[in-house]
Length: 41
Length: 411
Image (cartoon, rainbow over all chains, first blue to last red; front, side, top):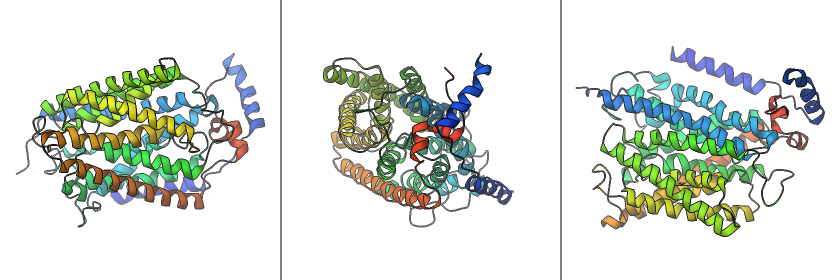
């Protein structure tokens, strides 16, 4: 059981290493802000 | 024969574990209020993610490395308790022998969670989340677990030398404070800082966080008596007293120095007092706690001012409060400790045992040196795998959007 628990964490750890790193910059910030407006209203 | 479980002790340790757990979200708010509004979510996320992360790694291997049977040199525990194998509802026979071993483990887990979260204040507003995750796993494994073993395991080498640390002045605060200084030097200054310091975006959030920290600290320190007893009551009172004294000391100094009684100063001062009383809480009198609160208020205020004048961008003054405050508290323990308060402790300088102050100083140097060197190594290795610092454009946008795709505020 301990081995399975360690393995499940290892899977998550590998996923963190491989997860996409998609930087968002100012233009993306404007887009997200605009997108959120109707929800706030 | 296994010791008998005491219901009162068990209830207090479980309750204390819950109190200490609340400190990490409290820390998230404390730090979250101090940063600019474009980085509040990323700052809160550091603490909140660690709450999940170390909850798992502590069960899998952290507890075994920190508190498991010693591997022979007093440096680190073995792997006997990996996955909490053998850690059950019966007392351990070594630690907190009147409560279930799992209750002691859970209490210690909350300390292991908040310690790496404290460091995050140093690299706020510019650290890549993926690099932060790798750093947190490595730091809690290779820095926190060994130091906890040195100081709190009966087989630990600093424990054997007689270093007193009631609730983590060296294990938690000094180790994280020094790591924060190293991290701040490694990652460099934030871009676009307004001198002398970037204004906090939400002081009420920070004060709320400080209040939650203060509340949770009763579990942190009084819970470290590991029983519902007189030492716990002493630690409860000394904790509250030192926090109060440090808060009013910090406010007084800032009032004289800057011309106004700072609200932020009251919050930071209280935390400095809580840090300094941590190693001493169960070993000193309430009167000594007042002197410790006074002293740490002066020393940490000075350290924060020195940091402002330096080129080191320890963004949220983790070293000035936790590093300096933790070292101050550890040394103060060597001065004010008395067996009249806690027969299981040792006398300090004022009770006729000058050697205890030297022992405490040695403990401070050993923990600080180890944390500095290994933190530097971890940062170097992580930076080779994933660049630690975000690109300038992301830093300008703010990490909330750039790293997490979310915004804290829509107005």
